[in-house]
Amino acid sequence: MQRHRWRLVCVGDPAQLPAVGRGGMFAQWCEALPAHHLEEVHRFADDWQAEASLALRRGERTAARTYAARQRLQAVHPALLADQVARKHELLTSRGQSVAITTASAGTARAINVEIQRRRNPRQEGRSVALGDGSLAFVGDQVATRRNDRGLATDRGSTVRNRQTWMVKEVGEDGSLILADPRRGQVHLPARYVARHLELGWAVTGYGNQGVTTDHGICVVEPSSSRAGIYVGMTRGRGHNLAWVVERTGLADAEEAFTAAIARPANALTAHAVRAQLCGLAPEPVLEDPAQRMARRLDQLQARSPARGLSL
Image (tube, rainbow, N blue to C red; front, side):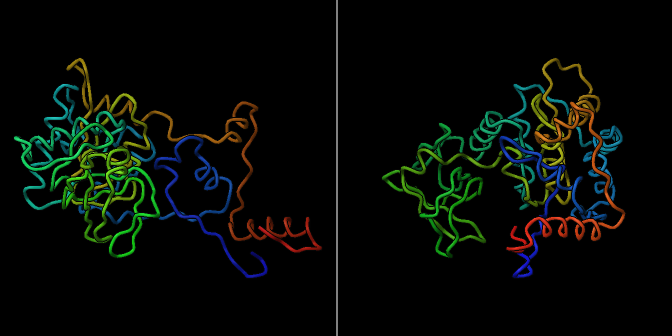
């Protein structure tokens, strides 16, 4: 890297969902290494949502109070969740607006997807094909690919990747599908991929919606929801972002339940961070000037291998 004068710059949000499995490394980098932090939020149409999203990111009660005051938190019984979310989705999309529905579990996403499909095609008319999640796909349905496959490419040269969403354009007699996306183009998925690695995709887990920007967002807060997952779900929409808090008793207050959910630990911790906590180790102090600290660390690395030069 020194020979070619390269730099490695990692960009992301440490408060969003970490890698599946062992995660938390990016968040630790942001604390232990020099980092620049953006100070303004530009996504939302309303300024109050920018402030609320930052409070949510920090797990503060004020976030729940703000969302509740704007009627953005609703408690719902699990038996009614799919129907109510599907109705809201139908209302918003009928106006030509895009919606991101974020859940914590694949089972909840599937239940919502099946209900959305039922409302769109109550008689299940037309040719269909069975998908990997046990549901059926018809022309016009939104689906999500769940496996990277470099051998499958669109007419614009974009390869099929995990968690991409598409619209079903054609259903083949052999169980294959032709999918389309406005930016990526069209792709033919063979029956073997469809049967194993394709799901309905109106509602997806937070990992599927992370990075997506839509007109509106619907976040399903479940018992398994993490603060990072809620943060993702409540920040997808430019306009209206709504949280449905799943509550089995019918007695809980949506604001209190939301407050408890975002008070959970922010994210995964690396093994080094856990060791530091268990041993009571103090974090390494960060210099006031991040550039100076980086220069010092590079000098230390170079000094360890003077003969061959620095190679990272």
